[in-house]
Length: 147
Image 1 (tube, rainbow, N blue to C red):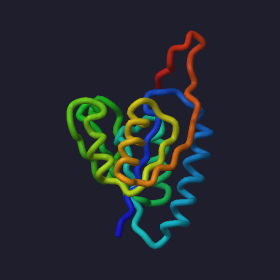
Image 2 (cartoon, rainbow, N blue to C red):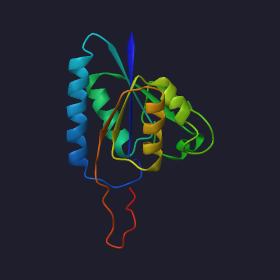
Image 3 (cartoon, rainbow, N blue to C red):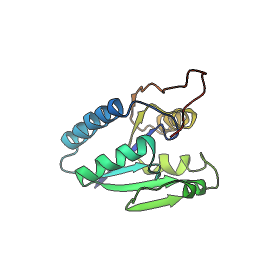
């Protein structure tokens, strides 16, 4: 049986990638230990930016299957070469319900409004949620940096 592990977090926001990678490495080591006899499927937002990019690269190192769930707007971004990609709805957030329905456990690493909304959705569906705060780096004028 496969365990579908969802990852959410910053896509557009700027963050300390070394800290994020350290968190991701710890999570993947825990996953490897906990589910050593299971097929692991890593599910994230399909785009090759931010937290999803780091997660997919790490999943590749572990040779885990990768699945992407995004809206059609995602086609405007660089995409990771996932084993499967699902495009649901037109706008960001339209895919959230499909994403939540696909996963057995959720990890949040930083993130914005959509990430926090998906945490609530997961909890409402009795999906275990693990949250890691990661500070977003902002410009001195208070506006967010973008990749």
